[in-house]
Image (cartoon, rainbow, N blue to C red; front, side, top):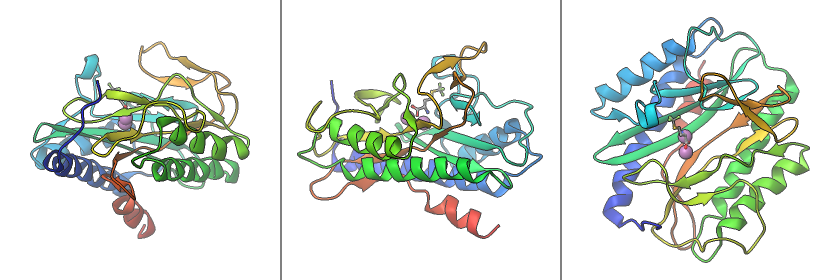
Length: 258
Ligand code: MF3
Ligand code: CO
Ligand code: CO
């Protein structure tokens, strides 16, 4: 069942996704070679609690941390640890909160120090693909239009789209219907309707699309060990243009000033 949100509910979802966006900007201040992913997790948890919200991933299906930090060939659901980020790494930081009963869920892939140009391009194309997908999240389109736009842009650059993990509806639950695949055909799938709130989150691999799960039972990585990128935004569907509830602007302001 797809839960359509009222204007008031969308404003609450905007607040929770804005808080996640600000939490990721807080992390942007500290993310550099030498910092552990565990330290970033602490910063995020403290920031979320200081803002009277609850970490949304902590204890979700038994997940042990506030963030998912997925480094290099890790795609998603990397668990923050004593791993020390080093020059040339890329790390997807995915964060969730619950504020006033509604979830926020947003992710950004960060470059650590000097990153090789082909990997920087992977990040650039993945973010572009996300925005191309977001543009399709308007009344009258279908879910397949979103996936098609993301897949086309990513594959045109020579990359591959992860199939097993998908975007999703967002509300009082972290994962609601519909599923939002990052691949698909134009004009197929569920109709996109005003009041739907969805997370669009392409996971794009530089090499092959296949993934494997690591022994910790959470971390997903590429089977060929090549790099992967992940960006995520929450979007409310409207007539005309999509209403993006999260933003990367706070993050990118911090990164520019570094
Ligand atoms: N943040 C993921 C998503 O974007 C879900 C993480 S669930 C967790 O859908 F349990 F790993 F935190
Ligand atoms: Co997420
Ligand atoms: Co999500």
